[in-house]
Image 1 (cartoon, one colour):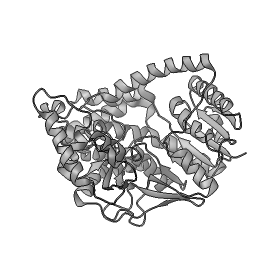
Image 2: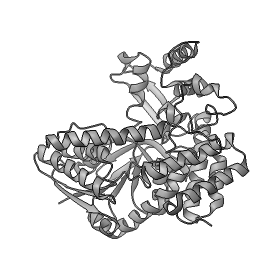
Image 3: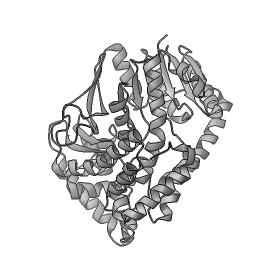
Image 4: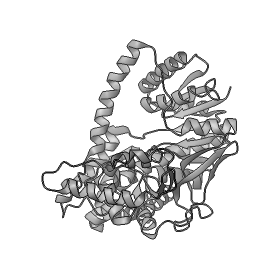
Length: 446
């Protein structure tokens, strides 16, 4: 029996989407769905839900559960695909640490899972665990494709691609909804059908480089006009704000829209969250401490949903837009499919970004796997924005590989938001404080 292994199966809502999608595919529905986690309660909840869904879908597949590090190799053994959605350290304690310690030094964040000091710390506690996964995979499923959904995407996928020999593609949700969301937001729904687009850059800052309607007409002139109008109207005194002010400002300042939300992108640069200019928080409607709030709501929401599912025992699923099941189906059936994937910038996929960078580009999938497409050069200003993030990504990976604390300091100093708010000595103090507060969640650094 073919096998899909899901690492971090305690992410119950997400495991339901991805494996539920697989159960909607004739090519995948009779596979083994192996769930792995280190939390017995969350693993059992997921097993219950995935089993119920499998029954509702006709009971074609087989659901198995593997608890703890001692059973990890068996979970992975013989897998053809491995989906990764782990969160090392969870919301409590580690996300709380990522937000509360920097706050003492005057550094505020919105999401903290991709870049910034929060993203750096999250990568440093996750890479050693993923390295263990890779060692096990080399032994028991060396040819499996590793589908990474865990953030920080570029740091974790980049580490796997450069240092483990495991075939890895990083997957996000933001590429497939980018142009649709923008056109709806600007009242241009009539241009949705048959549109053509090109998106490339890095994860969470992939650029919508081209957007044409079904007749090949460039939609950007009208997008730029409407985006500017919408933001200026929202900035007028007493006007109602909207939730995408930062990204629409990107269009005004840099010429292009990007893939991930404004609350994310407000902290990937040195422009919007500045203690010296507190009025910017309100002007651009920036939700500080958004991720901790979101975590608390998700935890409460899940408890309610879990109880409802348990009482109904019947669980159906409609296939979502997540890439994972479509990639697996494409490889298994040798049917071409296109995604936006996070891959190493090998062979100059994006000419003006470094070869070591993990970039987000169009990729074609078929029976032979993932084939990234060459994009050429990004507009200089877009590549420059990406580089401010890539610098941090590469230095964080360097810190994880060498275990040298100096590279953590350097990553934090070169992080656009951190470096624009704090002086070097304060950054070093904050990093030391974070390392100490994390305790055993981090390996030891020299």
